[in-house]
Length: 307
View 1 (tube, one colour):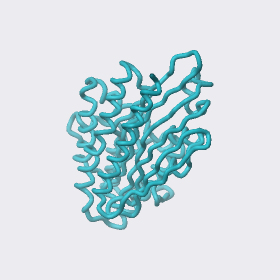
View 2 (view 1 turned 30 degrees about the vertical axis):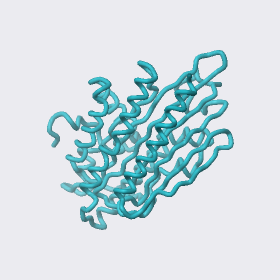
View 3 (view 1 turned 135 degrees about the horizontal axis):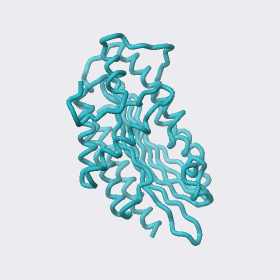
């Protein structure tokens, strides 16, 4: 039964990758995704798709992978030592989009499924995933739209689901060494296996299927906005935070590297250009200061009117 579930999820994820790439390339209008299939010596492989130097996206990727092996890596068993020594299958789609225009936010998402098995014992399985938004300039209507779509995707599964996974996202995408969130959050869930496979799989599909509704209207609204070199410089500076999070804190990056995944695909999430500046402080009264003060912290975006 476990492998029938795996096949069902894998079929959905391959289709999701196709749909994401088709819609994002159509929105970009100038560039298309190029595909690079790969195999993993220890078991499995994937297909990486990357778009570069387009009309909207300076760099983006939508990756599918299915890796398996005789033993879960330490990043997966640290929090769940009872899984040590189990064989595993991990299948997922992850995506990240780095637009060139600083007024269009960066966005990231993934949906994934794990099965850990051991002879004589029942398989242990769970879903995980979510999506998050990293704006460089404070656009309240964009953030509210993003969270509204996320809330609506969660609504059929219970009134408590969006608040719980929104809070988990705020907590996960937090740069402890900077004391700030990476962006304005969204949804994050992991270890999801309550209420049976069909319920959990339906939720994973709701998250994956809602991403384009959350992101594309923002892209369409902002892609034509004029920007200055100073705004571009600030975007590259803030991209540095994205790099810091992925290389220092992200469990997915660690799992991929520890499990012998394909390094090029794992690090596809990094932007093509980023910058660091010593002791940067935003100018008083500037949009950059507003971003730091009001956006890079957990907030109830759909609650009271924001300042």
